Length: 64
Image 1 (tube, rainbow, N blue to C red):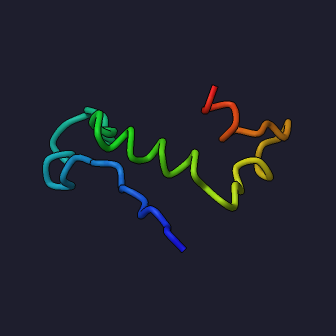
Image 2 (image 1 turned 135 degrees about the vertical axis):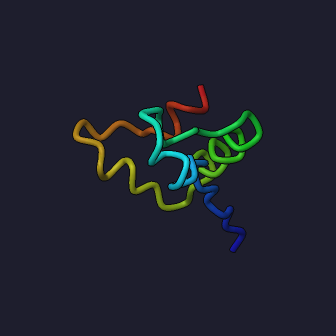
């Protein structure tokens, strides 16, 4: 089974963030975001649908 590995979101180093009030989460760059989107779209066990309170087929919505 070909499983794409989750890419962790980049964050400020704890020593740096202890000295400021900026966002801790730095987010994804373009390549990381596209890789994560592909991982989501190709998911074989979309638990996000089960967790969605209105049962939206999220992966199908992203493909449009």
